[in-house]
Length: 272
Image (cartoon, rainbow, N blue to C red; front, side, top):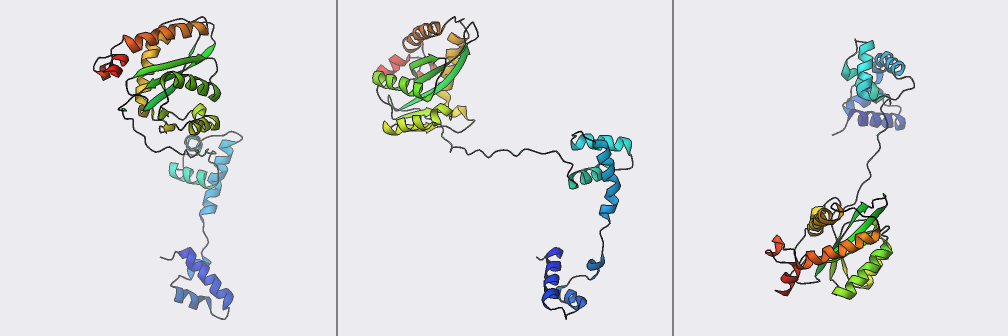
């Protein structure tokens, strides 16, 4: 389908190349009305008064469309909302709208329960504060097969290098996992951490952005740890956090029954 604008362009091209052909004949061949050449749009003249009204209302202030419509109609009741909106947008009075950055997401990675120990670990960070207000972070690691807490590291700062150091200690103690499930935090996406995974032949099982349910086992563990330890106690030093956490891990792994494990403890489930 050829639009009127495209027909006008074709007519202008033919007239430029073959000036001896009359304008009327070209329009007849193209099936285009001759009156379009002589028609002058009157809309700019009609809009001029409204444009001046909007300019006077705005002054040096920055107002959105809805506020401009209300103020213009209050001062000039003869103008309708649709008319004001059209002129407001047409002549560039609209406020700048910041474009959203496109986020490249990971493919869906639903969680599944492994069938053997050290098949897949899950890791996540938590944060809290000491009594004096100093912030600290914990790195929690859980074996998804038996829900066993492999370790919790508490530090005031947790860069990728500290994550790797703690993982190496856990591997030395519990063995190496085939994969580690994490979110997309900067500590896990860093080149240093990714190189370490490749070097040790460990798969990075990354979840989708904004989908914590794909790491549900560690999220459920975090809730229990926060209720039993972080929210239930007042810490005066980082050593207090570490000491109480160690005692709680012992109880969690060897005394606390888990409904998902048929009310067995992680150690009992692993031995069964």
